[in-house]
Image (cartoon, helix red, strand yellow):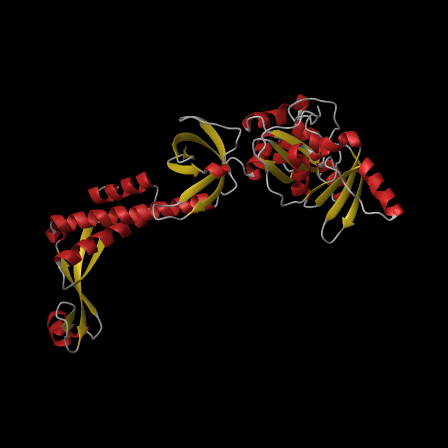
Length: 401
């Protein structure tokens, strides 16, 4: 670009990341706004001529038969004296004005309008870009803390990680690098606010896509994931090929793949289970690492299942404060009613005797629904193996090597 005006437009467009047409439009609007302050009773119009590099300012008058507003109208007779018989009613006539005559105050007004227009265009670009990236995992740098929220720098902009989207097991300091998922973009008076998350299941799914080649290429599919961030998570996977073990692919050799994700989530335990079209098989897998004796559908319409486990497997199946069965219910979408063999036996005997079933303070009957709330605990019971340990458990647990 040759002249100074064109160079200015190009430089601002490149710096702000907006189209040159937006800068040109902002410049024209700014000059018109400034001209209206200088020429109050005239209809002003500005144009940027990119070929000549000149800023043109004109006063526009409409040709009418009888003039009522002299600053905005011109009579047909007067117009024909200037332009001949070509002049007709409703035509517009332009009279050049010198932009240099606008003055200092008008120039400041023009500057403010340009900055405002460019800022609005920049905000729209940011909103449009990040609104399409919801669910994407991005890397950022911790900048500062505001009332429990963490402000994170992503590229050239700042985003917020709200307190409720932070994991209990994590803490950060300024300049720490952090991996987050884009949860949403909100419009506000100060510009679009990008909301990030470290607790959303989408983060867990994206981490598996990055660590497991079989998921990235589509051989293995993630059919669902649930989390109680900082404590435990369950992921359901499915293989499109019979020869590929979906759980083994996600665990990796000696657990290397899942251990990498566990480290990223600061020790959050992860159960990887095989998804199945059969709801009974899926619920059985989802309760891993506990071994299930038998499962029966109580109510198909309301999606209720009864699960029977051995007495010694009961605490493992339930988890501390019901965490394991609650996550399984969320993952499968079924209400899971867990009973021990002893309780089921007493229940059957009571039915034969025509008596109602009673339970003492040590009742082993636990029910969990898909929408149950998260607990406040941050640790697992000693009887429940962790995903980052290697106990002797079934192959569908993340401990599998």
